[in-house]
Image (tube, rainbow, N blue to C red):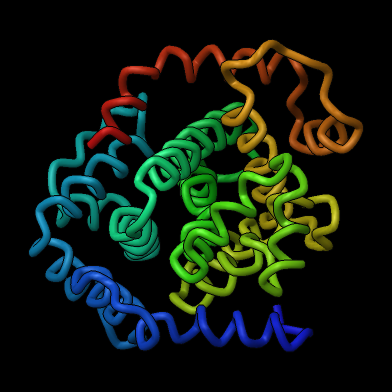
Length: 282
């Protein structure tokens, strides 16, 4: 993930120094500072989160969603810490904080958060179906796959909104790289790598648009492939079915899911509609 071009190096430096360059809410700054300190424990993170009721509520809600359909009832941040562990709570705290604290076009940010949440649900359903990766890992990777878009928007504002609206979703990474020096996939991977997210999640973000180019055939490549398919499902779940592209068909095959499986997951998501609306509306 080393930057190559001058523009990419400049963007990487901005992302790495985002705490120093941008005025961000105190709670996000505290979360990132705790997460970025190798000596911090889960109790340090819990202490920070508990001082922000809205953030606590969102993380608890997200934690319960990870175990949707299981006999789990996470009612507090300490409870979430015991059940989910440091990696998951740390990652949820960062991702939820970034989305919640981002400022600007609320319609764009709300749509981005909704899409991320639906992708997380779809990814967890695929992992449950295939058994290739843990359900909670798939949920987390889906939730943070577009974190780079929120970060690019915070850095470039209206310019990023205009670029996002210019063309199809499929060509967005190339447009971003041409305009800013790197795509949202790269930016998101830089950011979560800096804050010590699990390596497979970092790679899933980096390769979620092109998992076929990922050389690792162990956990990371299946996770990136699952997020790619989940991303497609979340984008198209309310549209009429159409045959997958050759690329998508190949990625679907690699994670053992066919068109019938896609439709079944869409139906399951439709059954979660009330929960989805309640979650992102809050």
